[in-house]
Image 1 (cartoon, rainbow, N blue to C red):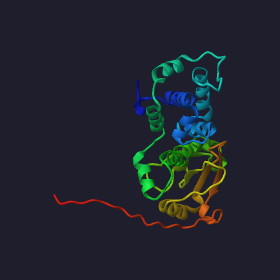
Image 2 (cartoon, helix red, strand yellow):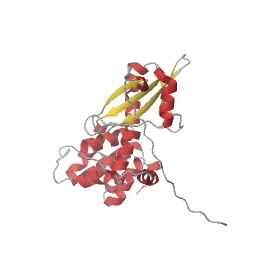
Image 3 (cartoon, rainbow, N blue to C red):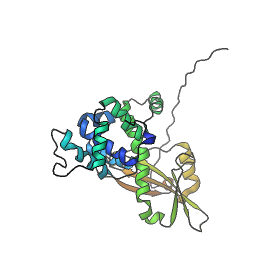
Image 4 (tube, one colour):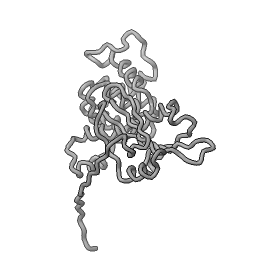
Length: 254
């Protein structure tokens, strides 16, 4: 049995997500921090660079074998590669299986511990889904739709999320000197609050019309997006919040 997420293909990760949701049902949703299957399909699907329907289809494929309340695809013969995954992973207990699915989605206990240290009261599962919604899921949603949006037509996409430059994506036009910067945010519901880091705010202020805030909303039901060009110009009202963080360390002489 392979439990190394680096050695598991994207298709197999999607199959395993479907198997997990079929086997553990509402208990699995709670462990991952999701409120509904629709939210799980949307966030896991986009986070893995695929479509929400893929996760649902794999869950439905396993339901005739595992679910007591859903029939799933009981009239269709199961695909061989799904059967192979089922045989290999069906005996995984809840905690191990949950950890495996979380590892596909960038779960980082160190980051969550840091968030809790800043005064955030939510449990680990809730914090995990928040980071997943505002991170991988929203970013991959943008990657999947950007080429069809008039604002970005004719531009080449570069993922800059790990470069710390104040935005998630750089879009360079063929033969154009200037680039566009896109910062992506995600919300579970149709409306809510979001925050810009000091670096993101400074970059938006410097780039003005070349900076876009791309907000993906309603992951819990049916995601859609809104685009704000030069968001500091007045389309949105930002309020500055300052927080003092006390850091504790232990020292010794050696």
